[in-house]
Image 1 (cartoon, rainbow, N blue to C red):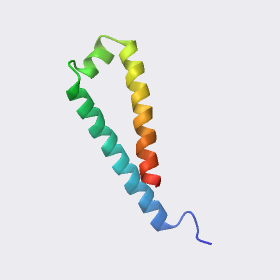
Image 2: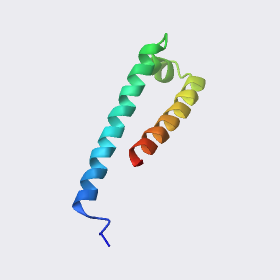
Image 3: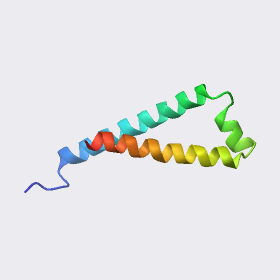
Length: 72
């Protein structure tokens, strides 16, 4: 039985976590470019709670999709 804290597993987890964060960041930038307004300004400056809720839901959904695709 292999040890779960093996160096190979730890390195793979770090690499996949970084890859998942990069894909998620790229998704957010692309989504920001596709919308007709600046998401950051709408959410932070104008405090648009409805848009923040939509983005939170989309972020959770994308996170689940990315995690499932990396697990296999």
